[in-house]
Image (cartoon, rainbow, N blue to C red):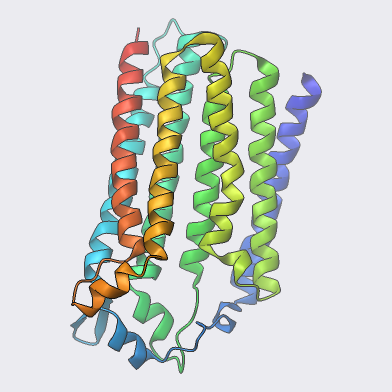
Length: 307
């Protein structure tokens, strides 16, 4: 057991070192301007094909989409702080880390941290993908850029958030080996993804820096958590395990609807009629509903475990 705990510490240190390398590559090499949209898109072509509002010399891109994504980000951060506050309210008689009530509160607290990180990533995404798209990717460019450091920041924060959820779930496990194994997995997962981003920037590889790559890579984390919840629920019938299963199923439904809508051709048909509601919008609406469900589920869980 001591060896496994030491391994976790080593992996955490390795992640910190790799993160420094990641920042060095992101800031020092500064080669994201080599990623261009394909097919090439001029600034004027972007304006002709997307909704925007001119405020002086400033172009506010996709106003309705901006409202949705910032609403999602603010809501997620707010829910995160609420759960964090409830989880930190530990009674004085809960000092034993093996106490089930303390473990549940730590679970809730770390879930809160994960949502704060998720929300911050969402705000970065909304800034580059929506609100400041033209200003960050097209202004003073012959052709619009494919990505920015805001989007890279969003990707890494989302992966950190998901792995923080894995760590949170480890606090529900009474078996120390299972708990440590989940911490080891989370550390390795984050380490590998940071390396993917580093090599993606160095090799000018779009897929390695894409949203789709991030989703595919994190699929294993969600599957791990869901399988863990299913196994424990079958043995213990703990209600929180069943509720977490429903959280993952709901997220899967949101992602299926997102990709189905993305490739359906419906967004293009709507825009031809003057209605802007693209795949990102339906994703953000779905995630708003997902976050509200998480809040309702974990808020009740905290209340029932309070002493």
